[in-house]
Length: 213
Image 1 (cartoon, rainbow, N blue to C red):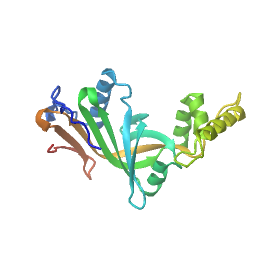
Image 2: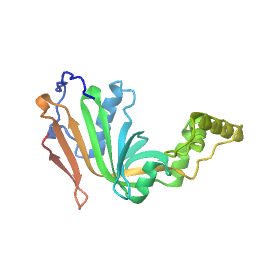
Image 3: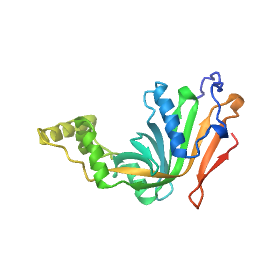
């Protein structure tokens, strides 16, 4: 299918210079995240997670960030899903945020580790009741016979847990991506975009590098 040619977007509302960056990439991410939240984006916390299976097959999907600090970037999911299985065999992963109103993107690469059961329990308890029931009803990434089957299973579980607290399934867990590099991308005119990358040195320091667009 040939796509209808659209007028290329001309970036240039902002710039990104070395002197604008915080020496700490997590604080810099916090600045940009706050700006994205203030810009009225529906989901500034949405990101694409890319994983690779043990036999080298890549896959990607959209998730929501649930927290970040100096230890990394946290998300939660079904460990028996495609991404969970990928991460069990290959902990290397990448995440990418796109904030169109600010003409900005952040790309993060590193290794993923599981969070503690306690941390997963605490977050699971904050989810809406329907989402907690859904975690029990969905055998994520598995083939199912129909939507009707899924709805019936959900309603059965809803009855099973009527007037009861809903525990976290053992297969529903949290993950933390510990970054080895964090790249901040700012759209600029003539496709000469600003790309500044923090790279973790073996001695623990973060080195800032400018990349060609």
